[in-house]
Amino acid sequence: MRTNVLTDREYLGITIPFMLSTMTQPLMGAVNTAVMGQLPDPKYIAAVALGAILFNNIYWFFGFLRVSTSGYAAQALGSGCREEGLLAFLRPLFVALIVGCGCIIFQKPILTAYLALVAPAADVAELCAAYYNILIWGAPLVLFNYVSLGWLMGQTRVRASVFMQVSSNVLNMILSMWFVFVLHFGIEGVAWATLLSQLYGAAVGCWLMYLYGNFDYKNLDYRTVVEPETLLKMLSVNANLMIRTVCLLTVNNVIAAAGAALGTVVLAANAVLFQLKDIMSFLVDGMANGASIFSGRALGQKSSALFWQTLRMTYKWLFVLIVLLVVGFFFGSTFLINCFTDLQEVAVLAAAYRNYVLVYPVIAGLGLALYGMFTGATYTAPIRNMMLIALAVFWPVERLLVPLLGNDGLWISFLIFVGIQSLILFYSLRKLGEKIYKIK
Image (cartoon, rainbow, N blue to C red; front, side, top):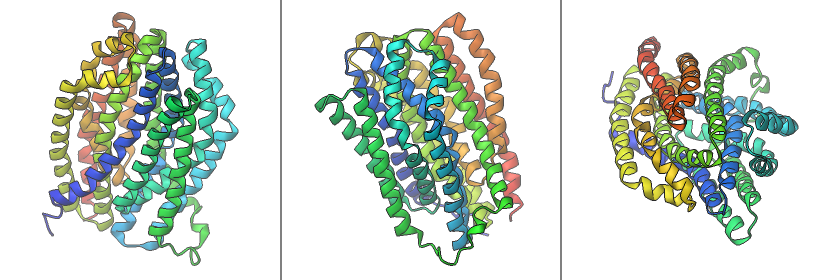
């Protein structure tokens, strides 16, 4: 068996494009926040921040559609089975269309429940509702994009997946600035910009799937798409990822509610810092996407050597990335914060808490990167356990520290939450290794 099955060039050739394309996702939210930050009241930043969290609640909950599709598509590529490649696309697509339509049908109860939970100021709630009422119509488009993007990534169609992500997100940035600064549409302009970019992304996704799918639709037995045993297996994998997402969204909502309780300026300052944190986390997530491709391919090829080489590569380049992120943020944090807002009270408060973002990649980076190793192998039970334990620790710590330390307590609780994830996934590597050794 070959031991040197993966080179730095091959690893970076996959991970760097995914990192750059994945980073455009938080940049899209960052531009929306920055655009609102130029308007003469912090309520605009706060409303977009709450709206973004609400859609994260919806879309992240079903983020498994991209993650698991990527894993199964990578395994199909490793095994060389065309039919499995097609089923890796159609099964999650079936789920995506049902969920997307359900979001539209239940749009009013979703908004009502969310605003009741977070309880923002009345003017912030009104702006958030205006943002939501436009953007909710993109739910089926976003979930279709998750599936098509996940399939392209799993099949290592790097240029196609990068083009799909980057072009739609750049379009969103351009339209946001045009609708707000030129056409003066306000917060509705940001929402329309995002919706139009989602429509564009779905159109590009259809074209790319037609171009690269090379599927044999005519000879497929479509009963296999909804075959109970296979669907249950897929849903079992996805259920663990959904539990992870529920835990993550619970934490995000607790943070949003606590920030809102501390005042609109604190909520706005945290929104700026969390956008910067998201840019870091999505960069590492891009590396995890690349690692998941090689992990899934290793399972499809039944190659434990490829798996362990992927893990070593991930450790090495994760260390490099964390150093670059820490150094870059240390010297550029003031500039970056000022890019988001010219409201002095928000910028000053954000600067006071920037050190928490500085240490974030050091604490969270390992967990984010190893997440890709587990999802690529579609071994998700440790991910579920990791998040349940992390949430069980976060909740009482947040309840204790926020009344004592205010916003400092909120950030400390969050860093403890992500730190526990890193520790548990590192410990769980032994079980993942045992799974891989069984395929030799």
